[in-house]
Image (cartoon, rainbow, N blue to C red):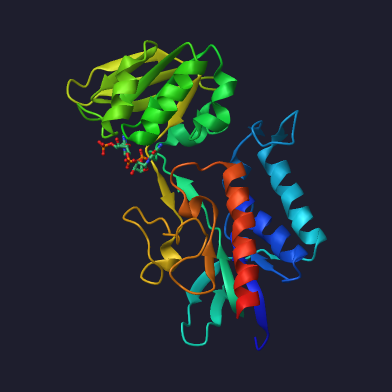
Length: 309
Ligand code: NDP
């Protein structure tokens, strides 16, 4: 406990592991604490085909094992545990990270706890996850080329996912539970102008049916209670994401949706020596490759911070 580490990385998605690779190669002897879902969101994805350098694609879990091995190769200590508390000390600039079993003192912290896609909470949705239910059109849309799909949601994420899918799929149904979309006007207009995209207002997902994979969706009109059957191959849930920032509430500046606010184009947070990267600070791009890019930035920012102190 008396050792003061150079850096503790919290979270084990592409951002965290990339930060670890850079920090380890800079001799910062990083300790990476994986969190409850080692590997992060990518471990729930099947094939990753858009990460540069994998011409034949790679599965999400395989990619995370590769990233972990790469980080370990340069000396990262990977601890399978979760953080229960962080204490920032703005006087000494030595911060404390507490896990379920240990405490660490550290000069810098790199937060890469990611975000989690929100789901509706229906049993059918869980049953077909990985069998046609997804929360990421950019990741999985390609598998529905020429097919029909349903998107659920009425915000910017749903508008973006639905218009993206409309370019790939034959037909996209967008289920919006109110009589209007919450998305920005420009996105709404884009949705309404897209020919193969049909918006079903006042409609909600009622059930998903199929033989291990999605074959049919039942929607319910929440006013008339009318049930409609849609023959589709995929269901995209696009009702928003939740950044994993509960640990930092009241301790770091967060935006109204809970994302960590960064200082300009750096990964610096409002506390000296504390940096954030990946989806926990990004509600716009949310890609494995952008998370990895900001992970690199966080390690470089942390290294420079230590050099300057
Ligand atoms: P939002 O919270 O803005 O929208 C969520 C949508 O999902 C709403 O339409 C909501 O319906 C609907 N919804 C929530 N729960 C359910 C449910 N149980 N059943 C059916 N529908 C449900 O989330 P977004 O992810 O769309 O956007 C988050 C933020 O990120 C926004 O600030 C947005 O502007 C931004 N963003 C920006 C992008 C860009 O600039 N390119 C892209 C994506 C997001 P209701 O309206 O009825 O509550």
